[in-house]
Length: 365
Image (cartoon, rainbow, N blue to C red; front, side, top):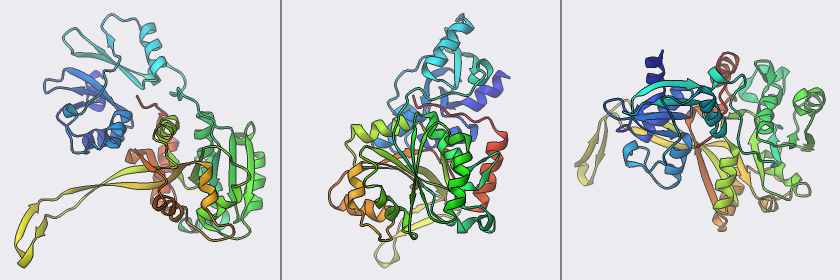
């Protein structure tokens, strides 16, 4: 049992940050035990450590032992279970390693073994959330012929309820929902939904499809503070207090939440110079990208940049404000922390994961 946990939750310190991200995704966790070549405890590395490294320009190919990581709290042999539980609850740790005097791992206690509920977010935010729910969901036909995209079923809930519940768990209580396609059905369903019973909901009706940017123009008289925008076909597993802190600490006008995607080319690549002379050869390289997830943290002035009643993509507005000198930041999350259900393969995969798997809503450390 312990060996299985060590295999699942540990990574050697000579592995790269990208290896750590992949291990977190494969193990469905946001925290790993860093060990040396002998399997002895070195430190803990969290998704927050990796995010801060990326934001500071550290390459994903950098070895863990070359990256500055703050020392984390762990338990020692002899600590009582009550002390361990208190520490885990204080720091919202999804698991706690128990370390001997010789730095051997003698136990790993998981949150779900000690607590009845899932890990909750430590820091609350209460930002307005705009859910873009006006699209037709054409990539999910034929189901979208029956249900508008926001009401697409995900397990026992709809996608819009899943999205809202994650933000409500973070402390958000004010929602603006842009609607167009089958808007009457959406408004009626949400008026009966228990998810939205104790929060404020304002529907913003588009007279015609205006794109993600054009729909925001109707919010000019509604939002006067920092707010979050999310598409209605994605789920994000991320502590948004971390995104908000990054946004504010860097004086961003816009923060784009990105997902780290790696793609391994199945062939050797060649770089050539003048006359076709070989300069370098790279066998099956792995390329890393940051993908736009469709989630943003925005300042209210952003809305003033949008022309009313004109079809506009939010990405075009972001490019415009960036070119005008406004500060646009990018906050990275892991690949598995972003679920795009807008297409059938991802929709089916997401339904399976939400129906059967333990759902950790952990914190960055």
